[in-house]
Amino acid sequence: MKLKSKLQGSRAVLTVPGDKSISHRAVMFGALSQGRTTVDGLLQAEDVLATIEAFRAMGVDIHFSENGEVLTIEGRGFDGLKPASQPLDMGNSGTTTRLISGILAGQAFETELFGDASLSKRPMDRIAVPLRMMGAEVDGQGERVLPPLKIKGRKGLKAIDYRLPVASAQVKSALIFAALQADGKSRIIEKEKTRNHTEDMLVQFGGHLEVQGKEIFIEGGQKLTGQELTVPGDISSASFWLVAGLILPNMEIVLKNVGVNETRTGILDVIKAMGGELEISEFDAKAKSATLTVRSSELKATRIEGALIPRLIDELPIIALLATQAEGETVIADAEELRVKETDRIAVVADSLKKMGATITATDDGMRIQGKSRLHGAQLDSHGDHRIGMMVAIASLLVQEGEVELAGAEAIRTSYPSFFDDLEALCQSY
Ligand SMILES: O=C(O)C1=C[C@@H](OP(=O)(O)O)[C@@H](O)[C@H](O)C1
Ligand SMILES: C=C(OP(=O)(O)O)C(=O)O
Image (tube, rainbow, N blue to C red; front, side, top):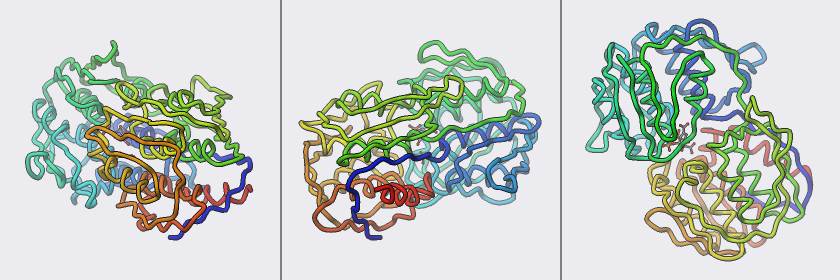
């Protein structure tokens, strides 16, 4: 695919698709509840479709409304799942794989999980170790327990008292799902606070848990009730347009209905620290959503590290591009988790932006990025990673000399199937 900048400056209003993390969890909690759940605004992208198909394969009736906008899940409760007749295809989705493993740990049958080439390199020892402690059998490939996985669960799991060795909402959520099926009270201690959609949604479905700082206490044997949910737009998808609005000349981009749960808004803090023009309006406290407006800005470098990292982990590829347009050296540290995403995002981001003329050094746990760089055309590849593909597409908007060729753009369907339509809409608003 050839990407060429036609942008001269303008104002665009966009609504990004539903939040991926919330969409996965809506399907899962819906399936595990009693009664019907409806979900408006669900993200209909490959990762979430993998979650839907997995629960259908375990006997859950899940269907879209005629206009395709509302998903209905007929909940079967924790005791109503049936063994799948075939291995479950997790596609590219780490979230599906890890969260479903926590659910399967409490089911008295065996399930096989497999995924694509990228997923087959993602470490599952981080869930295998604690789920085994709770009494489930979890087998994978090699020391890091890579997929394909075999999970043999059982009723009456043991409660767990566990300190997470990594800052991961996926591991935390897997353990919350397992703890809900265990005898007694579990304690899960986070390394850093990560996205809390599982905790929020458990409460929304009539369940309970206690959160004290980084400690979560959760009682087994809870009964959940189906709900009517609305999913806000995904701030991780919005971040591509936030950055476009800040780095392109004479721009204003307005993003409606973006999820602004405080465990996800690290990118907004970074934009402010870099001196970017950002306005947050129409804040809806119940929906945790808002309208975000950005304008072309003179940016300065910043440091991104520590507790901020989990609050913007998926935004780091596009933040790296942002930093190439800021005055001075931006440092990203404590982000070694990037190395075990869909690609090694430290290596691939540094390599891709270097090919376009940026000055970046990859470090063990992040990057050092020197601004400001004039970017030029290059031949690039998403390497099967949606966030790399989208970052390159936004970077191409800055290019004045040469052309950007992006191989593997189809990976973007993982989280944002309408990305190129929105890009087109942005270009047409000029
Ligand atoms: O729980 C979630 O929905 C997610 C958690 C994060 O992963 P980790 O838990 O591996 O950090 C994030 O990178 C992923 O895109 C979605
Ligand atoms: C890391 C991501 O997703 P997952 O872990 O679900 O594959 C992502 O969406 O950037």
